Image 1 (spheres, rainbow, N blue to C red):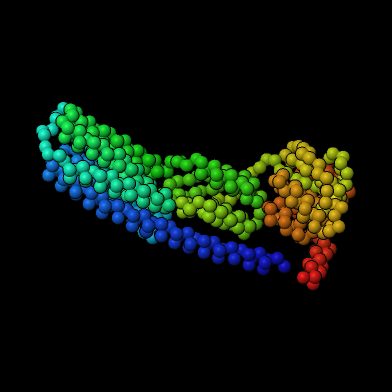
Image 2 (cartoon, rainbow, N blue to C red; image 1 turned 45 degrees about the horizontal axis):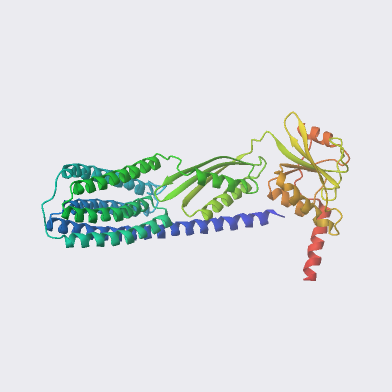
Amino acid sequence: MRIPYDTAIFKGRVEGLERCIMGTAKNHTDALMRGRTVALAATLAILFLAVIKLVAGYLFDSRILIVDAIHSGVDVLAVFASWFGLWLASRKKSQRFPYGLYKGETFVTLVIGVFITWAGIENLIEGYVKFFHVAPPHNFPLLPVLVSVVSIVAAYFIARKEKEIGMAINSQALLANATESFLDIGTSLAVMMGILLTYARVSYVEGSVIILIALLIIKLGMKNAWSSILVLMDASLDPKLQKEIEEMIHKVKGVKDVYEIRIRQSGPFKMVECELATNPSTPVYQAHELADRIENLIKNSYKQIDSVFVHVEPSKKDTLSAIIPVEEVNGLNSRVHDHFGRAPYFIILRLDEDKVEIEDFYYNEFIKEKDSIHVAIEVIKAVIKHNLDIVFTPKIGEIAFYMLKDNFVDIYKAEEGLTVRQIIEKYQNKEIDKITEPHPAEESETRKQKTDTNRGT
């Protein structure tokens, strides 16, 4: 009996799936914890830089450094918002929020974008005011220059760590802040040059530097805000990943067609929905196994994917692929051979509702092998690439039978000696029954071979 065997496999796969889901959830929690730690550390570091810039700016009456301090203050709010968003995303799923709070991180990224844009506009106005103003002479601004150098070094290390963790956990907020931190390197260089040139009483320098910083800030802020809006509206943002997943699913045996792949971003993770087709006669438990196999395949291939929903439907193909063992090559008048694996030839057909087309004849190159029991297996391996839907045969062995069933192929009983044309007419008239178990004689022969093999080992 195969029922207990199938039940054990199904139970084992379910338990394996549960372990996989638990492991994935733990990995996501650990990733979010790493992101929160980095975001909090970056918040404290940038806050410290903002304070010393502000103090040095007021002590030396450097408007450029004060504006840069304000810019850093906005960064503090932005990075703190990232930490808060990651904290929301790491909260456990609940009955009220069954999909988690991942989009809280996306919403916070939107807030970050608005804050950055607002700060850029404020600095742009300040830069315009200072554009025609030449600063009075001062002592050499040693402390502001040193603060700018420290800011450059700190911004580099902060940006590198934010980018590293952001890419590892696919956090859009951390990646946005990493981009801003890298921009801070250039900004701090411009600030340092502006301080030195202002000290040299070069006209328009102070206002120009402030305007340049402001324009860069506005561009970054608008980019972050727009990308967050697209994510919150479930826009399709990763067509490359969508195509990769579709190609991956097509390679899974049992999948007859892929109707649709939908991907939506939810905070640092992605949610995938797949709609695919399999053989209409596939049992429910086997369709569930197929869905589980695809879910595990996608999750294990892409760490940024949090959940996968697979909807399996009966195939709606208008054209079916069929194979029949025959005695000779005589078109549709070829006569059916009495055994699948020992037939000298196979005819491969394309079946439509109103017509039958011969796709190919396949010569059984394995028939002369001494081990005739496994001939059918070799034939199936060779012809399965035709994406078979149906096999017509008078009888078939156990291993070949289950191999075809595992590949979601229906097996119909064909009468020996009838022509291919007659078999197809009977099938279209629903006068042919399915083969639901392998041929008993072949089954016994296979078991005998297994026993002999075990004794030999």
